[in-house]
Length: 233
View 1 (cartoon, one colour):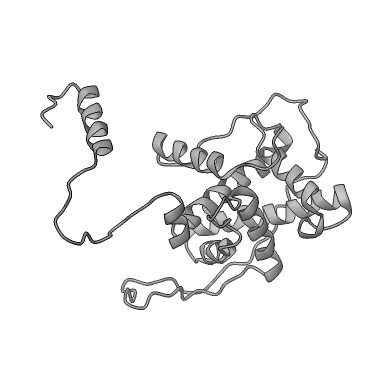
View 2 (spheres, helix red, strand yellow; view 1 turned 180 degrees about the vertical axis):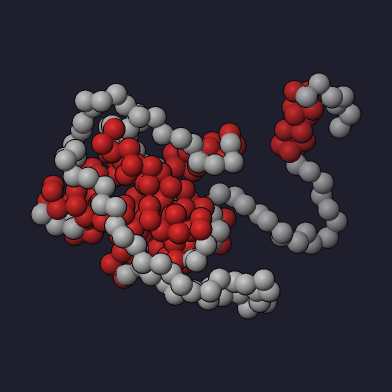
């Protein structure tokens, strides 16, 4: 079994899910009795989380000088774990940096600290998952996840990515599934991430517009054919 997912596999997983439905793909649960490398007796932490009482953007945010007005809640150690996971989920590939190298934890910290209902839900998933990772890393190595070493870290992540998911890992795998989506989504908002996926965006064209590429025209003709519409281009 491959313990470390490749960048290509992670991006394919993310975009396949987004193309199918406007949400992340669902996990399949294995039949009872399926265990694995992790101790099934270690339960989900269910931490009592602090409520972030900071104000949100309000109804008139400053779009010229955007900033997040809320207090950030993740510790430096928690962010170090998230950057480590970022480099496991989206590792460096050639000139393309890994998500952890781009400090993806800063994005996740802003996200889970935001005083909105959706982000509060993700806050519970991420913070409980971080505590859960430490519990299992200690069970395997006697150290927290951050200090447990790459073999233990990769093993735990690989267990969280099993499909179907053993019942005792379903809650943690669902939380990791969501974190993985946040990592990929945040990565693709950075200049380096946009370049890595070939996103051009609003790039000005100097001189006369060259028109669509042959590849784009072939794609359009294929869509028109599939829709049984006349192909006149």
